[in-house]
Length: 116
Image (cartoon, rainbow, N blue to C red; front, side):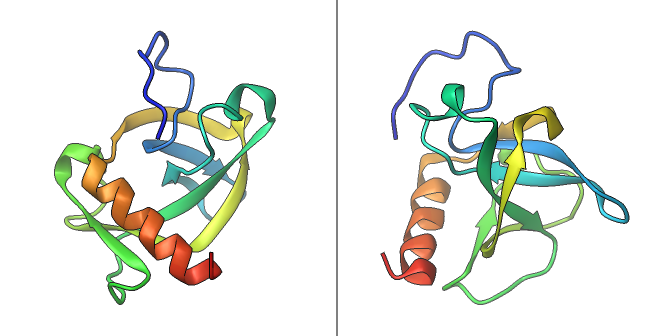
């Protein structure tokens, strides 16, 4: 992952947790940004995985610590099988950031799910 100094909390970075506005009936829902930092400024949409309160198998779901900023559920998981292209203009609020180990676990799940 490329690390850079955050100059603006309104610019998404890989590993950030954001509330994204999905069409009804979903509405606001937490996601984690997966697009590489180098591409984000050139794209109108980012690839993201949905964060859920429903546990799943460790091969597809990564548990998050509260420090990631998700408060919607008592325990939260990144679902590596629920990927979306989310237009940047649908990102509403930055909640937090995955810890490096959490992002590495998500990347590992993605490699398995997508056979990379």
